[in-house]
Image (cartoon, rainbow, N blue to C red; front, top):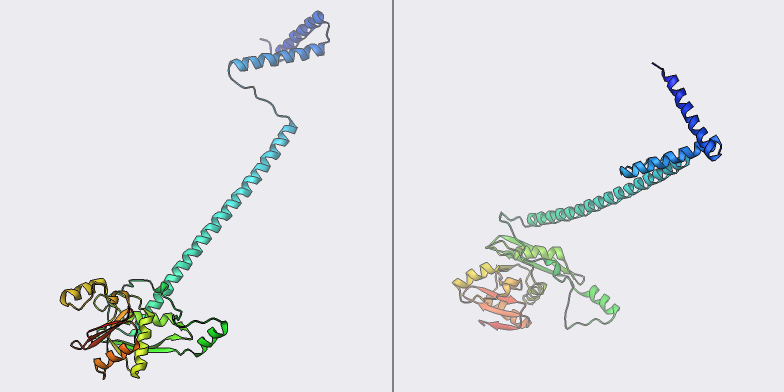
Length: 312
């Protein structure tokens, strides 16, 4: 049996005979005949591949491999940079969301502390939940008087310097709450003071709280000056929820369906040591809002509505 070396020698011999035949027929040299044979072999291989739908594998040169490696590295670096940008944007968004959430939680925390301080300041024993019916953020804290026109900056500064501060004393016999504070100073209503007044004005039947019209406080302040008293006004009825107002209407004909009590614009008062007739006369003399006289129930009603009176 011939070995592999013999077989290899025979193959080379047969190839040389083939090249020699081509040389004899065409007159070309052996090298050219060998090159032609290689080309014909590639053509045959390509035709076979096309018939079998198999693409011939191209062998990349060293230059092509270097170029491919360079492009691959560049794309990899670009992708890495893009990923870093995405991570940075994502991190920034998460940080922004966390910051906004932190501010919201912080504001809620401050509002809770403010509510607790307000409750502690009143020292009340009422454990019911007090619902705020309307936000007081829309309540004007600027002093306004339609009869007063300030044209120049000097006039406005003079007004702020000389306008007096306003103090009021109130007590609620239904809840036991009482306070004495300054609610207006240097041309401004003091929002914290107004919130404490809102609380003492609350509906003692439901615990609901509603912003009180600052103009109503000004009427009480003027009434205090007119009577020359420092003792607190007793709040017979301050804010009324629609539910409480409806219940009172079922038991009394003197309760209005659209009472200004439901808007924080009315109050029923008594004043220890003073006859209700005296309080009524002083309120009528101010010519501001409505005045109602209820001698049998021993209180006077005042509000910030149109100038009118009843029961007098």
